[in-house]
Length: 68
Image 1 (cartoon, helix red, strand yellow):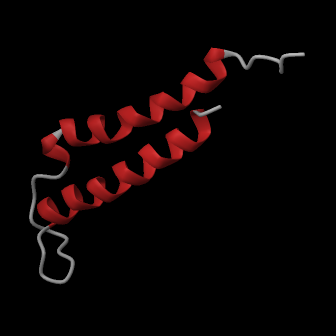
Image 2: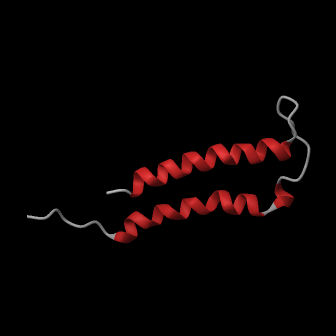
């Protein structure tokens, strides 16, 4: 007997999370400034670096939640 199939929609809704980094980086007016600085690093740079880390974490999360 075959196991019941999961709905494709339940799995693919997690893919919407992958748009979050794209949208947040698409609006430069949000992060094109110097203040606040963290350890002397301007906001412009550490905001982008934070999204590199967050994007990797979101990708791992979506992978875990969407696999069979």
